[in-house]
Length: 212
Image (cartoon, rainbow, N blue to C red; front, side):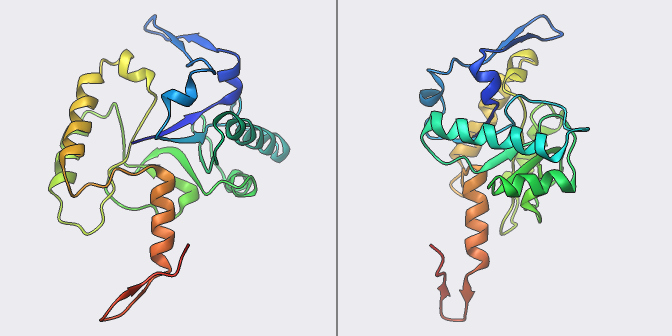
């Protein structure tokens, strides 16, 4: 189970581009995405994947709001998450993310540990899929005795072709899937679980959670 961040504007254009390795990167056709991403979370990545470094608040709101609106129409379900295009992020942008109704924002940084994010609007992924020590990172995660540990692998799907990472990722997913102590959750499932758990009242006799 995964979370896929989509630029509706580029999807609609059937946008393609040439990677420096010579491979042509293509978007999945609009009439196929619903079937491809069934069972997974669909989240925003901005409408057209712009550089936000010098963007005004109005321009940011337009990019985020349009992507959320059109993705929800296309998939017929709520889109509650956002991942930043490129590396720019700011307090003002975080406010725009909240204003558009997103429940979290994943930024283009990694934590390099198994910690749960303290701020869901500045969420750093655990590891990028191209990290040389990724397999060791996953091995330690599977052996940890921490009560709550997060192993979140992020990156572009086309890199699996470019960097020949399909076998590595297939093996990692198999190992994670075979472990009964691992909960395979999307970003929004984890966010809502943790927010609901924060509302729980724990006594010596019971755990009472009155969240919906």
